[in-house]
Length: 181
Image (cartoon, rainbow, N blue to C red):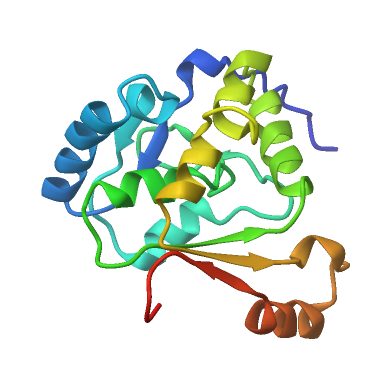
């Protein structure tokens, strides 16, 4: 029989890690502190250094079971890309020509992310700072900063509805703020 390992994270140890060329990550960290000085992402950013796409995807794509495991060389636990708002704010600091974010329509997206933060030991205030729609949260800032928001409905499909998910992804509406996007 397999022994159960108790996982009780302390949110103070949680970091937002990103892979990439070191000079870009240094710039990203510096710019995050300038542009978003009081955001959780700015305070807890962590460069994961440069790696291959295969390695990055191996240690970050843990859906759907949140298969926590010490996947980084440091022995740290990776929880994948569950905190969806970080990509826009981080990548926006590198001044891309266009930034499109993909998000599921409806409140379930925020509830899922909130439950992950709760699992990681975040307080209600910290969860609110990341996912509030009413206040200035990482999510609301990301939606304003993005040039386009691709609004899927993937949360309404079952686990094995690959065809429905695929069709929904390619037929979902996109909100744009810039012409020719």
